[in-house]
Length: 251
Image (spheres, helix red, strand yellow):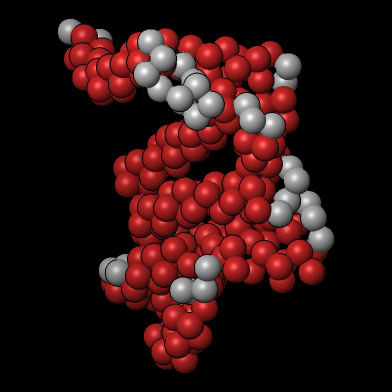
């Protein structure tokens, strides 16, 4: 019975998408949909399998993944360390707070020309833009998480004369990790969106660039296939971070 319930839940989740795909296929085959913008799902599936067979989707996905994960890691390290420091020092947070609130609303994609000027085309430019976009949810949530730590835990650390590193590793991060993991999960979604956007706009690499190439080649089946692979990559990354967040809550 334990397996039947998940299967039923999966069927309920897939019922509506399956009906939409079947209706789309039937209407496209009947000529009721414009073939140059809405090709049949079966044609899109064949195109997607072709990208997998020749390895092009793996290369493009790896390039996008490098930018998204690289920017996320840089933002996570910087955001967590700065967030812990500001969470433990309310006076410093009040001083730095206005600067954070002034920079946080700046769209990361608006920095693409500046990043291109500094780094040129390639991975470094993408990582810089992605990290700027991702640092804010990590930083803000980390500050709130550290401020929400039970004060008695910090008092115990002071009484035991623990070093700053020991307090960080043994007290602060374990107590705040559940909320920090949520911030990382939010940042991961932002990282993939920004990485693909940069590739669509100016950087000739990755999934975003391949998506635009298919559109410019008037290959809607390839365009939808690339879009499906982007969605699959995003789903996979979200599942990984959801598992990480669940483990953080469990701890």
